[in-house]
Image (cartoon, rainbow, N blue to C red; front, side, top):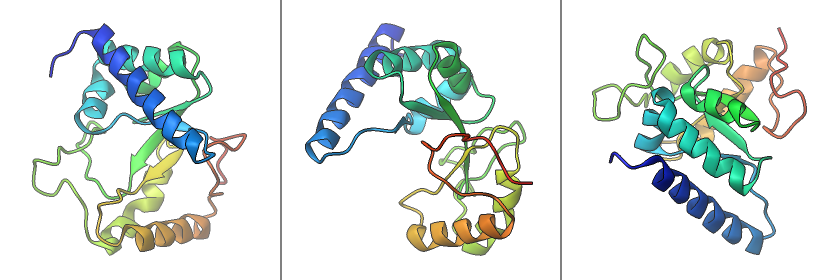
Length: 173
């Protein structure tokens, strides 16, 4: 959908407010915001959309970490409004040569073989600007895969820690 920027900002605000309210009822505080699906993929390249998202996030809580592909318009928009940002890599998704994700509508977009995911995880983590690794919950065996990814990263001397930890982008050699 091609929405006006004010409407995108409003939708982001309403969604964050709703989720924050639910989280607060459970004694939890939101830590980060990650646009989902098509909105995320559009925001990677479209500064108008990414600016609208960043304005929505910063108007709710400027301490929320905005996640996006490294060097994307989404990360740049978050930085421009003073939000903390984190570049993410997708363990279980295929990439195009330009660094964007292969759309799920194309064959091979989702990597379902754990061995293939683990074979590339260290090189993904070594990419410039990668602060966090995403494993989709609908990937078969996601919880077990996440544990194996952590073990592989630790074996490669990465310090695995929370996004909210100080020195987020400090990586071990």
